[in-house]
Image (cartoon, rainbow over all chains, first blue to last red; front, top):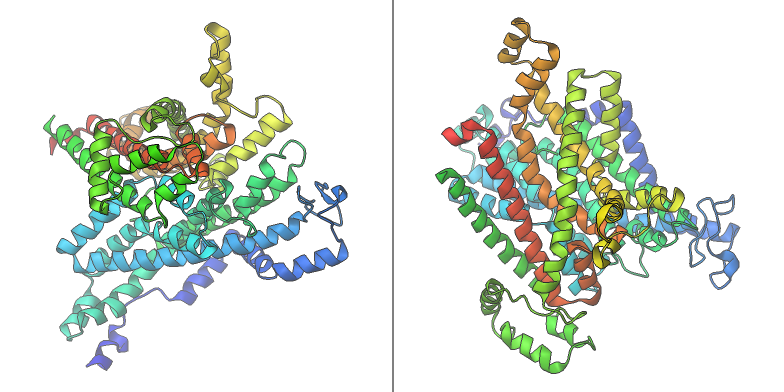
Length: 300
Length: 321
């Protein structure tokens, strides 16, 4: 029975992931956006190694004034900061934290939002009404205010806690989109056919509904990724997110903002990294939205 | 009318839900709020004990919430540690300044965004359309503090056109007459510009999409066929029917704008709600933090409610059904 249900003739017409990737590759601007993200991610991964090399070729002495606030030069392409640290090295090290927090909280939000959206849309009725009323309440809440208060009262929050809480507060819009798509998918013929062949609800949900919701969830998750980069950066900018000795791009902007007039590079370099990341992610989201053809996305 | 009344009741319910949620979320933060208050030398132990019993923080969580709500409804949100002022007083000073910021930024950004969206939709895929859309995509979704820092760098630090800090005139009195007015406008310019730049792109995007959706419809073709000028077709026939998404967007823009205002106020030292909240965060001022979040939440709900009522006013279909 199960072999029949999951057999080829009844396989749901899910968009195959390789096709999506190939179509993404056909768009030069999407390739550019992906490359930007890949370079930043590679820099973050190799950060300790590159920072060590930088230090070996052009050593800095934090104790001496001669190492502080140096303008960009060949030895220090992005200059040095007020503590006599190489801004390029800091940028790469900060990128580790910024990108890791963004990735983890996006994954958490995508998982929670997809789960709630699929369950609400598939079960319908009272479960749906209750879940969506809750989601609407969260959506009406100014999230950043609550996050500021939370992290103000939790000053010892580790980076993982930051990623967890941001992720747990970022899935509401995504769940709405996924629910809408689930409502559209569950009435399709292949779902009815699977049911007629005696497939259990869980099987229908996982094998026939979920694959057809994945594309929409991916687009929504891209939007979330852009948001959470901003949220982490903003919290760290206020001195509430990533705290010393850890650093992140938002924290670096905070450190540099009081030197805007004299040593602009301290704030501008990490600010550019944030802006590039957000722009690249948001462009990818646009392209993916075209490719997946999402109707139910919230206005942006 | 009864429909509007129903929206108001719904809005009140949402406000109650949102503030309840916010209260418990804040209480989720690890640690006892009174432990952090006791670290502060500004408050005597007696004051803290008084606060603790007054708001029932020695009681179970539900009782705490009930007491907090009862106190809040009587206009008592506790005491701010840093200034030893009542929280309601501090918020009462700060909230109008934030509302001023948003009240100037919202009409400006919607006017600019709608104009841009109409111009783009008038000639879709033209060079103007492509260039302006690329620009708004770049700006779109950028964190507000980032844009604020860039504007601060360019206009204040490099060009020297504005002071790097605003809001002082509002705090200490900018004087009256023309000079005072100019002072206030100068102070408002960069914070408002930041919020406008952040919102305009989203508005333009929606307006363009809404217009392009309406333009192929039959009533537009009829208008063209009867010989209406292209401008009249676009503005009188199409735009009118592509306005409703703008009102919806207005409702959705409130949480985003208030969130953006927090950072804008921080960067430009604007003494509003955002600044108050961040100061409260720095001193871990529990009652001030909670008060700011709750009042902020209510503000957002009220803003969305007003947008909802505006939709009733603008769209006869919503009133009729």
